[in-house]
Amino acid sequence: MTNQTIKLDQFLKLKGIASTGGQAKLMILSGEVKVNGSLETRRGRQLVEGDRITVAGQSFTVEL
Image 1 (cartoon, rainbow, N blue to C red):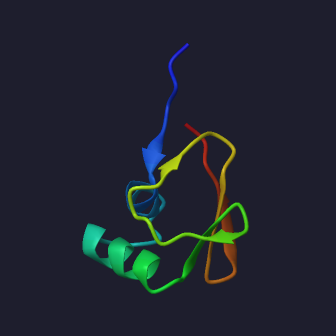
Image 2: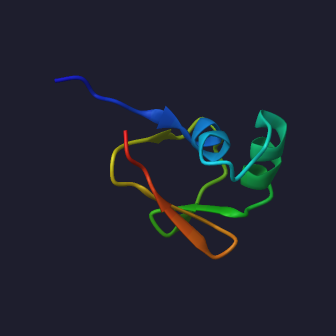
């Protein structure tokens, strides 16, 4: 079994929430992003299947 993960900043770009890696980094560092209901400021945070990401009142579920 492979343990698939994606970094938080990559996920934001993949979903079109952030248009660039720089924008994703700024969103994360400025406290706009929650992972599973908790504020997350590490852009390298490894996400796994089923994690819920919330940005500006919108929620996204990680599907790998």
